[in-house]
Length: 224
Image (cartoon, rainbow, N blue to C red; front, side, top):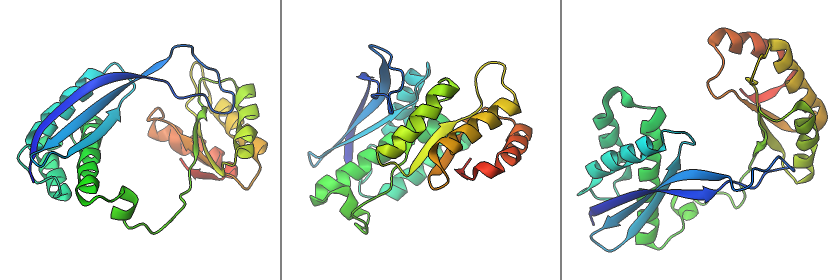
């Protein structure tokens, strides 16, 4: 079996429903790059990736260019294809748009593998667990007011989440004191037994990360 053709497109999908009564934006959409990978055996693999920025068209182009390099390859040799594409990317990876584009291709390859063996992916990768932990992401965004996230966090606990993620690196004229205040307020709202994670999205300098990280050590972040 060989990869015979690829086709990508950008589709606009409705934005996720807000968690924990978060503010909704009527008509909001998210730009997704989808990939259809065809094989000469008639099996089609589907992949997708998204960036959430003005560079979505650039991401699609990266998917197209990397995907073209996979044509003619055996889709079941997933690691070999990934290694080939990493080598072809030179200093562009790992990370950034390269990894996002590679993700769509990797998903499509695994989709083909599952379909070719008539097995779901959870069995292909071992099938060890029948349950997996999840964490809530999107309810404690940096642009939401402090009073909102303090109300939203306990609602997530009520919904059954034992792990959740907040954002720091607050917009506007922020200070370490504001960052610390927000982290401690959320921790107080959910209690000591919930895993709290923090995403900065590459917005702090090394100095800020060390400084603020030390200040919120008492918050006991699961990861930063």
